[in-house]
Image (cartoon, rainbow, N blue to C red; front, side):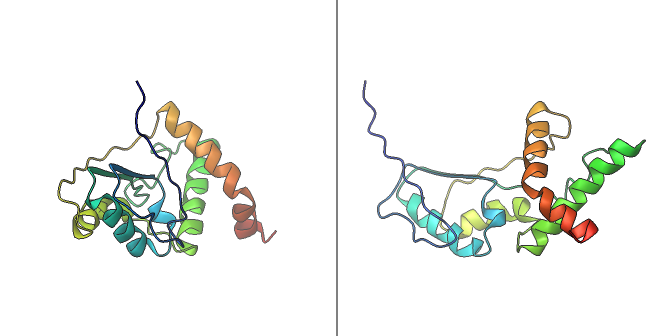
Length: 150
């Protein structure tokens, strides 16, 4: 059975949304990092308006400030320092750290009618560990520059 699928990608911070309605518009951990997030959200909402679903998982680092709630030793202190450093770098680049909790309201304002939301804090899940490692690798030079002036 052949499905009539078309996959499009675009830079939501720069490009206009692709022409035509879509059944699915999906962004994951993205819009919080886009300085023109309101315009990008409105554009994605317009693309999905004639379709069925728009999905975005918006992080909310303000609600999950620590990676190690029990800061009992140097390793846990470093992990929390890395998390704080990441949040500081994100904010300095224009990221909206409380975006996750505002996303449902913004999706409704963009014209989407059926909006559902839930929240969870994956502090100890294997997926969270993979994401944390990837994040630290990506921001390593920024963290070193911020901490040590390199």
